[in-house]
Amino acid sequence: MIYTVTLNPSLDYVVDVKSFRAGTVNRSVGESIQPGGKGINVSLMLGALGCESAATGFLAGFTGEEIRRLLLQRGVSERFFFLKNGFSRINVKLRNGEETEINGAGPSVSEAEKEALLGWLEQTLADGDTLVLSGSVPRALPADIYVEIIRRTCDKGVRIAADVSGSLLRGILPHRPFLVKPNHHELGELFGCEIASREEAAFYAHKLCGMGARNALVSLAGDGAVLVTEKAVYFAEAPKGVPVNSVGAGDSAVAGFLAGWKDGEEPSEALRLAVAAGSATAFSEGIATADEVSSLQEKVSVVRKQN
Image (tube, rainbow, N blue to C red; front, side, top):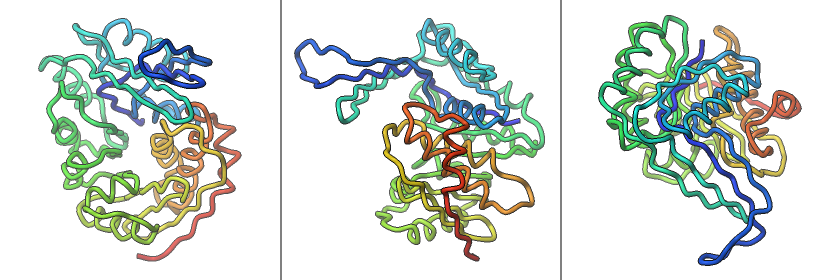
């Protein structure tokens, strides 16, 4: 089973306007409301690819109820913990040629509520399960909560897939995560440099593996992705298309990789599905469908090189 953790989910209110002027009344030409959060996006794509998962984390208030309703409507199994106070955040995404975001802070989490989630993960996860930790940690929770989750589950044979950056990534690496997935900007920030080519991405992904990662998947936006494993390096070219949505593409790539990974088999197919899923979402208004992913999968070329 794959479990995804979203510590600070949101209702994403997406508003399209022809033009935007501050200080005046602006009228929308299109609106949508959808559940948001990196772990939630992973579960949505896993569901589209026919892989079972369970989404967990914290919800609160009337917005939390709506997030839960939308997830169940889309067939996502969930075990979110409902907080006593506050409400799940609303993120406003204003689009008028470019996208402007206003992200809410989210509710407070008590020590007892935090412990309820961590205790459930500790009791529920078992050998062979995969746990996806993604996104930033909200200010209501301790910065090392991901490391605490790993410590409580590391003796159970659980695979950790982490889509985090900066100090969160550094803290997770010593615990030998199965997968880390920074984009090339996040990878460059981690090592204090600018990554301008896939060869440079592979070089620094090797460093991540030296620091503990078992597999490092680096997304390069329209230039595809690089995968460094314990045995080889893989370069994938992205399929051509018109990007219309930046939200969820990286999360879709994580889901595609996990859905495509088969123990003992060549990782190139996992990389191919990861790039197809990420690209399909980038070319769609929301998380892509299975048909949209499938239509791109054979267009992704993958080259393998020995370490």
